[in-house]
Image 1 (tube, one colour):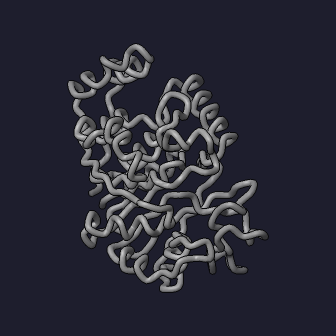
Image 2 (cartoon, rainbow, N blue to C red):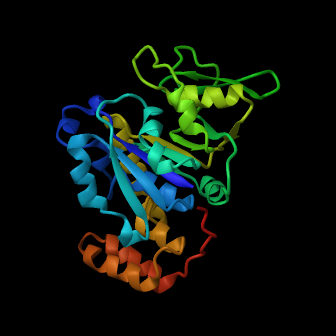
Length: 297
């Protein structure tokens, strides 16, 4: 299974800051924002990942992430010229996916949940679509699940003024081999974009959409606005300082997945000691042996 990480868009909700730098390169406490969704993909067993950026920002992502070989990953890049919608990213990834299944994740979403990590790591194949639902205080900015009287999902409504439920669909989607053909048949929405909700609704119409509801132990942070970015940074800080574990650490995720051996981990850690990041990686080596789940690919 291959991954698609969407790190394009104009970032207009965070102007003027994002006129100069991509939102996904901004720090969320002690890591660039893109580290969080990238580590989620690594935990899901994804090794080959296409990162979709704006044309002018791709060199910055390449400088930060390289080809991923330092983590045992295969990172590739594609350009989205205009913000044509999340589903448009699937069309850009058509050659990369080569008719295979895909995990699509948004570069400004942070999802922190041991339960979700286990579900993703256990994925072997998907015939159709798989999305998640999570209750939030205000679901209006998202795709929202609409349930029937028996509790089954009957529709997904994009950015409703009156939400049919509190369950929003976070920016993490798993699709079967036909997702590119489905995206290719979409009609742009009123705002001129190919909506990912329409992909999910088509799978639902065909009876091939699985929806998994996530509970209260899952934290989903959308960092698309200044206040949300500050809240996400504070959340990560509290977790890391209180529990002594890092959130969104790509090196740790790769090490636990068996992509890095101890020697490679140590080589990555030593240059990062000045910030304390490297010391954390060294403590993992000196005090804990990783549980290595079977890779899913």
